Image (cartoon, rainbow, N blue to C red; front, side, top):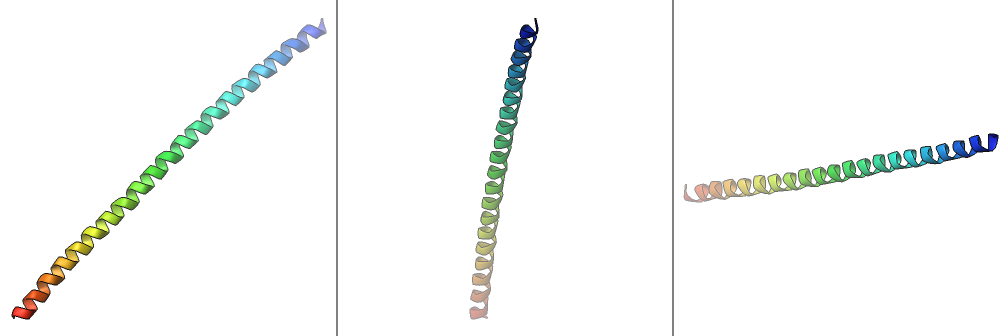
Length: 74
C-alpha cells in the first residue's frame, strides 16, 4: 500500500522539477532577450553620440573656415 504512495510522490516530484526547470528556462530566456535589447540600445546611443560629434565637428570646421576667410579679406 505504501509503495503506491511513494511512486505517486516520486512522480509528483519529477513533474514539479520539470515545471521548475521550464520556469527557470523561461526566466533565463527573458533575461537574455532583455540583455540583448539593452546591448542594442547601448550601441544605438553610442552611434548617435558619434554622429552628433561628427555633426558638431563639421559645423565648427565650417564656422572657423568662414571666419578665417573673413579675416583674410578684412
